Length: 200
Ligand code: ITT
Image (cartoon, rainbow, N blue to C red; front, side):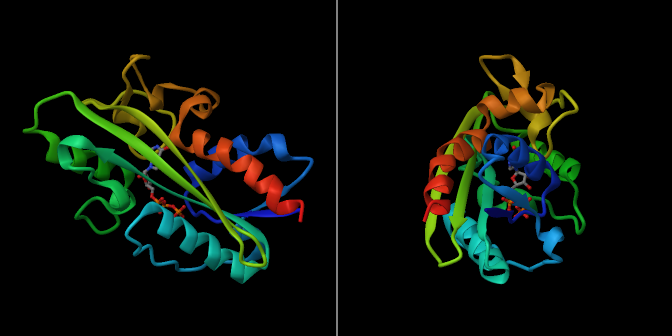
């Protein structure tokens, strides 16, 4: 059965592909590019779940395929949960990069006392060709640190410390990140849901 991965974020995509390898004899992963699909989905929901469902339904309806979407973000307690739903757009600059967003976050945290406790959250939504929906969630707790460490991962990984490991996520290999991340936890919980949807 084909499974369409509805993301345009290359960092997410690599992790999702690795997290879903155990299903390789049951599903064949497809990307929007494989179908020449590129949709503008406006992520204007009030929750990660709404945005994830919106992406999964948009790509699912356009392709007619079982579709998985990931909506995720970083929640910093000192900033009352920001950047949260706006993690991908968190910077004033037009054409901002991951580096710009990390700098913007550290600027906003500067005058707050440490530790800057935080968590990553990931919502995975599944939309079947006949419009059935399933979802799962994963969380990864840690803290933001003022200096970047490590070169792996993407987004906020170089400033996200896994407190008990004493390492940032960017200091982990992808295989290590995939044992503990918010995305790994959400996908782990999504696997039985995928199996249920492909068995009918
Ligand atoms: P798609 O909607 O195409 O999947 P996106 O990057 O726009 O890609 P989101 O709207 O879900 O995705 O934004 C998630 C943002 O949260 C992402 O751009 C990163 O800045 C951040 N983020 C999510 N997961 C992360 C991770 O594992 N490590 C670091 N940053 C992460």
